[in-house]
Amino acid sequence: MNEYEIVIVGAGPGGSTAAKEAAEKGLKTIFFERGRTPGEKNSSGCGLGPRLWREFDIMKEINSKDCPSIREGRAARNYMVDSEGKVTGYIMTTPTSSVEYEPAKSWITLNCYRSDFDPWLAKYAVEAGAELKTSTLVTGLLKEDGKVVGVIDEKGEKYKGFVIGADGAVSMVAQQSGLRQRWGQKQVTLTLQYDFECSTSKIDDVMGDEALAVWWSATFPAAYQVFFNSSFHIGFGNWMTWWDRNPVHYLNKVINLDYFQRLIRVLDAKPREFQAHLLPWMGMPVNTHTDNVILIGDAGGFPCPLEAEGIYPAMVTGRAAIETAAEAISACDTSKQFLSLYDKKWMETSVGEDFKSGPELQSIWMALPFSPRQSMSWFVPLFMEILGGIIDWSEAHPVRIRQVARRIKQYLPQLVPFIVKEVIPLLTSVLGEDRMDLLTDPEKLLTAMPEIEEAITKAFTSEEED
Image (cartoon, rainbow, N blue to C red):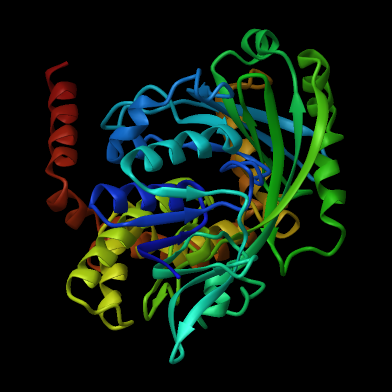
């Protein structure tokens, strides 16, 4: 019997973070990776958000030598695709002036492949003292008197200790511990993508600081495009309840857009791999722990409820899990009741802040970009009518304003119910019911935000002086 204090199944970002945190606390730790190296079995790249740099000092050490696929993404392009499959417009976004810290002021994401990032992160866990066991598939949980006390690998080797499940969407730890048999169809998405290779110089010359793109469409679920040093992904996902045809059919709709084909030509991009995986995507994680077991990252259902980004939640919950486990081990109490401390800890983080409005965030996202035929079919032309009508010389500007207003009026039967059903609940969740009336009561709004009243007063004073 191999005895440890912490046994971690999975050496992805969450598992490696947990291993590093545990080792730094002096806990005897082992973490397992089924591939020959961490990241080898992962089929995708990732966008690393600025919050990681704010909360994990280790991120300041990442570099292009250790992670050669890295590309910094300052700008994101948003393409609007109508029901005819035509790109009717696009807009560029960059970090806005309300962003409060670096590096978020400089870029939106740092993109790299998991095959680079995962081993880079795991290295720090090993240097901290954690034992990494690669090429090892953990196939079961070790139990005594019905309670989980460790894990068993494919060769029958046993490892005793507090168990952290960092083993992804199809989590063996979750299933065998009784926390979950499988995800419900409304809790998990099928995500698929094509990977293209192209030269670094082509991306630099053509895309510049654009390292991200979103294709908002009325014919397929919202697609993402992520650029790396010498390659890019194009892909999307949707909940399992949505698909009415082979998902590849919809992905090919993206690939076959005239605009996308033009992009392939100018970048001289070559397809090299098709990738698909399952991803939990829900409004609130459930069943995250039981006796002597904690789930983190995808295994616990922690991808962001809005855009399903998973690296940051995995690392944050990995840290919270070890803080909880360390207290439980010190108290000689690893019961489910004691481990409820874990939910309290992660709810106090930025991850928890997202999930406080998780159901509303997920609902509005599911109802808009991931309901292309129902919602995007009216949202795309509405959005482009408003945006395009501003920059138009076809008529006198007052005439164009009236024309745009008449066109917008046609979409009110779809827009108003959407606002009532999706937007208002989200605003209520974010602002709180006691502040919602500010949106409809001018006097209360002026009282709550005196700067508005001050600005109005100055405006009228200036007019009188003139």
